[in-house]
Image 1 (cartoon, rainbow, N blue to C red):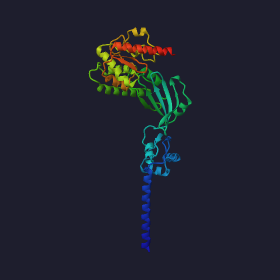
Image 2 (cartoon, rainbow, N blue to C red):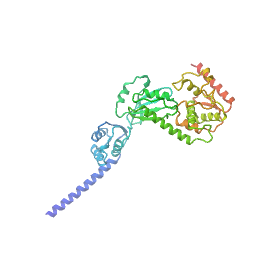
Image 3 (cartoon, rainbow, N blue to C red):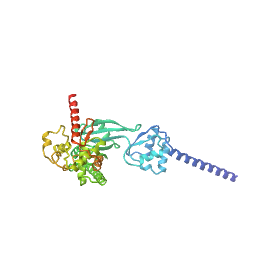
Image 4 (tube, rainbow, N blue to C red):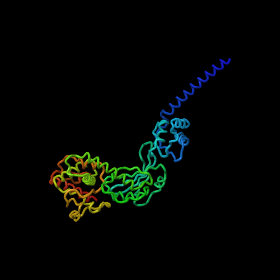
Length: 385
């Protein structure tokens, strides 16, 4: 009898072990297999939250099939205590294992609301925008000029959210004075900028910052990035250029940056100036004259006067030989590369062609014909107003 009972007990134990093994296999498969999420979502994890609260939210959003299994999996993989606050993009069909990785791996938020401060040549603009997880595109909620000092309510709402991301996007061609003034107007930054940064040494790029980030530290990041770009471009420069130092390369790149907004023209524009330097011809470029008039403080807002073109100043390349004494703006990486690796051309002249680009010429006669066409376009535009 006891042998029979023991045999039954052993059989039951084996059945239980097999069932538990099967349960573990099922659980592991369910934990790692694609989930039920039909389209991507933005999951917001509040500061101080826990896996129970997150798993409940995911279950309500129909992103997981079992909130209990989600928590068990987090405990089993030793990630339950690594939850990060923020807004996270959860892709469609994400497994529970993948979701746990997303909310515990750290780093910045990957969706939700962001505040982007765009610093351009002619204006500044703050954009408040939110990522639509379904389309992967940002939708604008507000945009305004912070220099005007009027902040919309939508900005105030997201400004205080702990998971809001902040970026400063610096456009090519802005001057250091313009950038410093714009950064001073950004109320989500703190601290003061010691001095106007050296002209040309702020790298146009997009910079992720935290709310309350120090302005001078951000400027230092911009300078460090530009130094690295300039060093790399100088190391990869073409042979036999008529410039002797990285500083001269930066000056030339800033002129190229101000002379064209067409990416495909940069190396041609650079070739014109390089050819002129080789021949000892004056550069005769309006942006340098304008910089001499404005000192980089804002936009001229009008055409150059004859008296300004005739006046001898360090930046008037109609009157001086060679390069001006310093950069006239902050050039981007593409302009740095174009200045140090210009196209191989015989070109010596260019003028606007009415399409946003330029007409290039090798001879003065060709250039004069291009200028005449441009003047005609200007007159037609004036008469049509």
